[in-house]
Length: 391
Ligand code: UD1
Ligand code: UDP
Image (cartoon, rainbow, N blue to C red; front, side, top):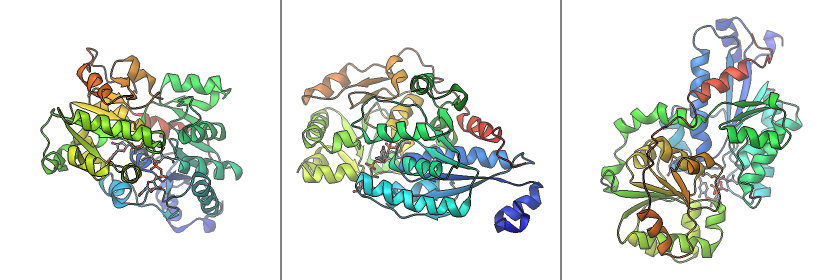
């Protein structure tokens, strides 16, 4: 590419580093993706220090899937994620509408930016739209958190993951199980890299700041080690009113004996309101708005038990060695169940959670290495080895 054609920022990078930068477009849009991308963006910045070959120029595209301050803006501020170069402002909608609008808007950005690589994370509609837009333009796609499977096609996430993995040319699998899942679907081993889990990097990176900055325990009135932290937001739990009611009636039953704090996802708040159990839940549980990552880390670290349906929170429970009960029929993070840190309990009766809590034990094995370390640095290193033409 002639130097005259490079955008201003790339020109100055070329001046400093004496080579053509490799341009990566990172596509994110939902809460867990901000956290994962924070770890990888940090690794990209570390890579770029000194005299890197190649220099990586990251262009961040926020689809706008999540948009409330405490579902989006807070993470950019707290986690030092570079401000998005583009915010597509897509917002909420049905799956087809939301994904379709993203696809159209992302395609425009990719046609203008012409990156060497598109980087997508996890399994949301933003992930699929990013991967599909790029693949149709013949731009290589790298998928961080590839190969996870619940084998439940009723989950929107499962559809997004399977399709994204088959669109991507570079697949960063967090676990050996994920590697095996990809191979079982016929994906070439040459495309698969076992990187480990970038969320562990985020946990290590921001733990100190969380300790120093978060006041959440005092603000909510929680005693360390004496409360249960709960998050519920998965469609299979929130969109089935009978199931949602059973889960929240179970939590309300638990609250007779335990303090239960619930940072409530807006989707779940709305479903509880429609089911007419929001008011009772608010009387019995400590229901708070969604919190920023630093507050969440402190809530997780100091909980006695975590009850969740979140993928990220299941792993963070393990990072902080807090036993976890997952309110789902299956999990993608099977190794945590095998290791005894996680149990699947979908309550059928209000007593089921109380029984599960009473029998919860901290496993004897205190190993925290299941997901490896430095996954983000591995991701960056593998990208650099692809020979995208930068130097
Ligand atoms: C999405 C992902 C899910 C991920 C979760 C992380 C898909 C299909 N699902 O689910 O995999 O675990 O993000 O949190 O991509 N809303 C607000 N404010 C916001 C964002 C959402 O009020 O800032 C409300 C809207 O009413 C919206 C609903 O929450 O309709 C659901 O949001 P959406 O992004 O569609 O799905 P999530 O449930 O957040
Ligand atoms: N999280 C947060 N504030 C909250 C709830 C969750 O910062 O109020 C963080 C949590 O620590 C984890 C990530 O969001 O890093 C998980 O996202 P979520 O549960 O929304 O999605 P999932 O992981 O299930 O896709």
